[in-house]
Amino acid sequence: MILKKIFLPCALTLSLIFVGACAKKSTPSAADSSAHAAKIKLGFLVKQPEEPWFQSEWRGAEKAAAKYSFEVVKLGVPDGEKVLAAIDNLAALGAQGFVICTPDVRLGPAIVAKANQAGLKVIAVDDQFVGPDGKFIATVPYLGMSATKIGESVGTALVAEMKHRNWSASDTAACVVTFEELDTAHQRTDGAIVALKATAFAGNHIYKTAQKTTDIPGSFDAANILLTQHPEVKHWLICALNDTGVLGAVRATEGRGFSASDVIGIGINGTDCIDELRKSKPTGFFGSMRVSAITEGFRTSEMLYRWVKDGVTPPSDTRTPGIFMTRDNLEQVLKDDQ
Ligand code: GLA
Image (tube, rainbow, N blue to C red):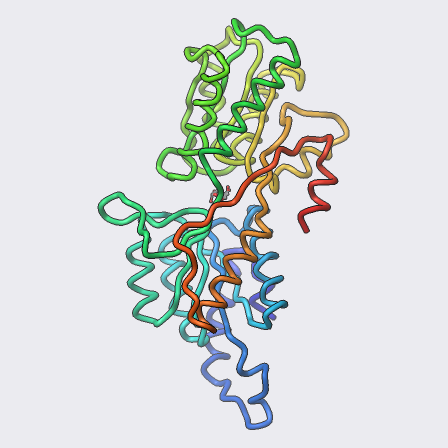
């Protein structure tokens, strides 16, 4: 119960110590050795617990836990040290496996080694583990979004809206906020670029700008640099790896005096832009490719549970689709994805 409430990394360390202490002294009495004591425990570890995306994945994991009657231990793991400590703590708690969105995909081999040592099964969600050879670690089951395809739909939707607004290609440019070191991010923004080019949007008006951190300040800074370099651009199309990437860039355009009617930003996730799309007046954040984080959390937890309980090995690579969400269909899309 206590662990279920943990959202902040700083609260995490203290709570883990507390849980560790409880785990040590809790030898179940005969009266206790009921169904509750026998419940399977599974971890769900996420790199950015403050992002609504990951909170939605946790909701999905809880739904699976309620359905199958297992216990889910939700932990925020913003860096490598926290990941390794979390695995130790899961083992101490008697957990049998965990789903993880790692803070760094290159930690993959260390995570696998540690999990094997502790006898824990692992499923990667969102960000696929990468081995020392730079290739994906295919032996760890992975579930994530169809990144290239979803990126392509962003590019197509940007141009469709640009045409709808009758913008001229000559004073319109695309601001692509990138985070190349993460494959799923790279695939999404590359997909968007391919689609922009395919719709005859002038290739030389597509500008990439790298975000150093995957949060709003990171993309705000990246976009600001680009806006300074291109004062000639009158209309901006904006895309990025996710909603926060686009939100930061939209804020940067506002800071430079662009109004909502001169900016079309389309995000990915559909979880981190809900307040933005509900604002009484539209902003430059036009829409998002909504992927169901709840379903991703549910399915990965369900797969892990079956693997632990019945020995059913999960598929090695599962991809999830996205649908286009704007102010017009927002409430309906959210209603359909509970
Ligand atoms: C990455 C991003 C998240 C989210 C997931 C979805 O982890 O950082 O915001 O987009 O992918 O797979």
